[in-house]
Length: 295
Image 1 (cartoon, helix red, strand yellow):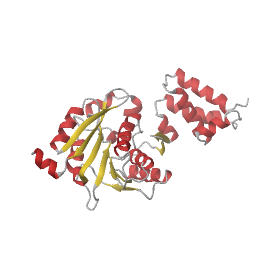
Image 2 (tube, rainbow, N blue to C red):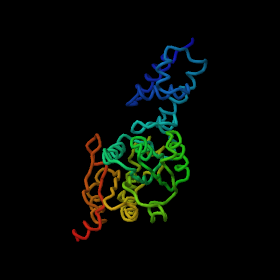
Image 3 (cartoon, rainbow, N blue to C red):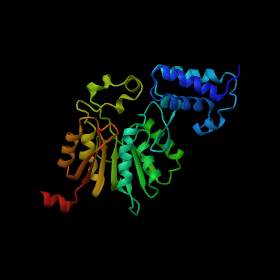
């Protein structure tokens, strides 16, 4: 018997709900839309139409992968971050709502500012932060940095996807080492570094520890193995009074505050995510005059 897209969507939603998937309605729409080669808006428009023979089997193959624990973003190969559409692969972390705290803080930092701010996004992964900032700040110039070539290839793809080629560039660099020569100075550095303590990775949800890249999670014994050199080495490419914004893990706020203070940052503060956890630490690099006065 022929089925409409709506029939198949309802079946998919029911399977996901019964399997305990929290956001079953949204994920059902994403899976059916991906199988149909449509955007979600196009799927909603075409819900009353009949699907081609065998289409429900294609959807069910995706549902089986989801029920096995694979995140929907990897199944569909796409995700949205801070209103910006992105391609996503298993070589990078899936952008999360918690990270939007950082993006929102960066946008607010430059609200009403004229000129052309330069922004450096370290450990860029999919390029979600840098692309989102470029979309929401049309005057900004953004550099995305990662040490993984596959991640950088995805960054470039997302830059092109959002038509940001003239304002966003991607470079390969290891953030645990000194910045490349001739990088210039930046008004803001953002970074979502690996920050999960090694011993805690096995306690993460299976959809994370079994599917997302280990190297993008593992922050060493205390979770700060990458954050330390980012603060110590990359402050050299910040302008006087430039800002640094770091995503952090639960319980790391005080340690990162201390690292920033020791490195000459002032106005250090923590920003909480929707769950009330300190998720982002921001600081402003003291000018030479301020630093000498404090000393």
